[in-house]
Length: 237
Ligand SMILES: [Zn+2]
Image (cartoon, rainbow, N blue to C red; front, side):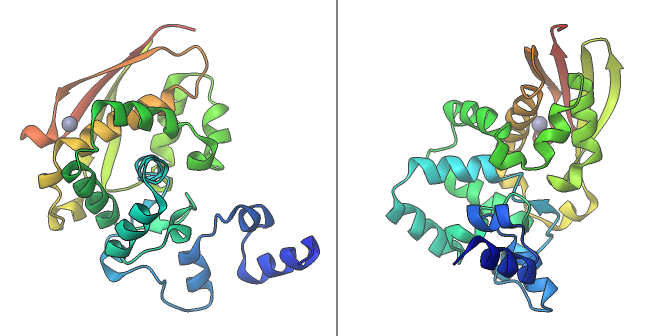
């Protein structure tokens, strides 16, 4: 197929040529633009207020550290195929991340070293996509956090972040479960959601040059508090 033909195919399916070549297709959007239901199993269509951008660092870590056969069998249990999940832009229901985390915890794969990897992968161009330049153009860690909050629906809207205090080189941020989470049984996954979020935020901050950030949590939702409260601090650049 020539590039021109490929571009026409892309145009027909409303997928950019870049994304088509890289296999980063938002199948959910393609199905909807033709008035069809997405192929995603019904469990992962419930509460679809997340983009793959949010669970992607964890998912890619699993993909890169397991054999093809293992990945295939894992995804078969989920009723999914690898190609379906490569686009960070694609919507995915809340249970994808919860089920993935549950599996990783059960297999002993949810560890400190995993979280360090997550932090690295968060700033990845493949994970952030167009959001990467939005974040990169921010002059400071405050700007990055503000931008992340403003564009939170490009990540996930199951837990809502809010800046509650801003000082020079310091921010206090809370993370509160959204209303619909009352209907989702997420507490058994517990602390891993919070640990993942911390690693993700730290990774985001590393997009800003000269930032050596530190994050500490004072209250945790998973230990009975209304919200998780994070204290973020960094050295002046
Ligand atoms: Zn917490």
